[in-house]
Amino acid sequence: MGNTKANQSTSGEQWPNGWWVTRVAETGSTNSDLVALAGEGAKHHSVLMADFQSAGKGRLDRTWVAEPGTNLLVSLLFRTSETRTRPMHQFTQMVGMSAARACQQLTGVLPDMKWPNDLLIDNKKVSGILAQGGSDVVVVGIGVNVNWAPPDAMSLAIAAPLRTTTPVDVLRNMLMVIDEYEALSPEQMHERYSASLATLGQAVRVDMAAGHVVEGRAIDVQADGRLVVLDDCAVSHH
Image (tube, rainbow, N blue to C red; front, side, top):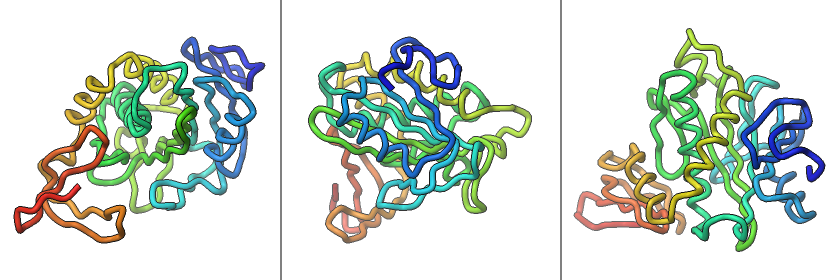
């Protein structure tokens, strides 16, 4: 990946300056591949895009599979030493928010952001995100249903049938927006994320990290990314 020019990919597409994009026909998981490449010295803003991945995963280890060539399947690498210091979850938020804005720019439809990292159109999932990493490297993988979706999900082609959009279009627009978000302070980023979160004020059922389920109304999101839920007994959980 280090031999790719910073504003183009190995397959010839042009990208915003400062992004190192490689596109492959097929892989097991772009996240796993990019984590491995990070260990080999891959640059900040390295991007791995696949036309098909056979072992993609989302949050809570859910499988993410798409028909070959139809959807955006991509992972992005951030080296924390080369960007503003911020908590890991904000990189996930940046990628999700940039995907939502890219969808709006290309189709006129703005997906709702469901805490913590899903994008929905008409209450059906159009995008999911998974982040991996540590103190020095964060890899964020995202899948966006562009031209295909399983029966219980949504695609941009279904949401905006009169607009023609490709995975490359979505990624190009995303990268330009991520540059904007990376310039924000952690406090500013938290404000943007909170303002964009459709979950707040809604009735929710949340699988907590400890393994139990909480039902109630989402009333806030904390700076560390945790959702605050007020249950029927007026007890808050986060």
